[in-house]
Image (cartoon, rainbow, N blue to C red; front, side, top):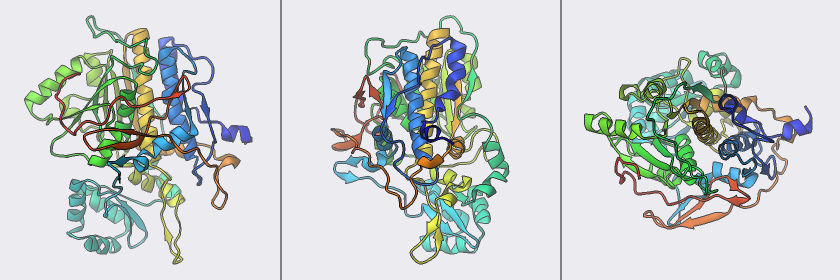
Length: 470
């Protein structure tokens, strides 16, 4: 492989080229400009390429939407900072909380398992599955089981865990085989447009906010989906996030991804709230969902149902394990997908005491890459709707992002352990007043005509918005 090929940014926008061709849209030149070092984090996988490629896909989608090649671009420093926004954030001077004490790698009888217990209900299910009420009991129970036994027991009780597999072990599994099929972004383009559908209104006179006038219904949680809708809000969209009242979000996580949005709580299981949701959908332009595959079916929120009623709608869904394969209905997070797919094994290293321990990517790259892919899909489908009439649906998953990462060529440009990594310029840190206190944060990873984009407003108080468009 040539050095030039190894240092090129992956063309992740290629998954969306069928939309561009179908709508007769025009793309001239490279999908999106970028500048800065090509490698900086180091490690055996091209995480930098995944970051630049996914952000570049969102920038390319915006250039297609606006018809102005090169208007939206990115830099290495902006992409790196955005993928690590959680670390940079300060809430009233306080660094935000990371993983909960029970989350992380734990030894089993024959290896390692990764647990996720950041949410109280997942911690409770984990302890119930292992028959204990203490962290010490969790450790003791796990060391009496194999990693696969523990994975099965915990998942059966609704907990979240994955055995740390080698790459070959993952590829030989049924889910590993299913995850390797299909594109990064799977598309289903709607046909036809009913009379009387809501006209798509885009602001053509505001270069920083090309999505002004677009209504986005945000039914996502955690990181990937909220990252996508945070970017759409920064681009001017009216984003209304709805969360279930019985499962409150982790507040630091909400603040990090809540810029520019409104936040409501609603139990969609009640007839009144479901009726209001249907009224919102009747005038929405985009709906983004981020729950387990099939879990929203009872509310009529499957893409095929939504598009049958309104072919002009843009529907983007994301989940952990994709819609095909034996794990399609399971719960999962970035760290859990890393453990299952072989990333944690690949990034493992010897401890100071001579033992071996699994490792992790330098950032939660599967979440963030999926988030920017979701945004890119929504923007490209909006461009199709404006040009041709109908919208369509797109589906992404964390596991497909992991497979995309493994598929990227590493070449000679990777930063190996012991070799100094190029230094990135310090990201521009910004401040904004909010009800949570002063926020120090990094902005979106986009340049508009050479100038950094910023968020339009701070995160709102959680669950305080009405179930209505602005």
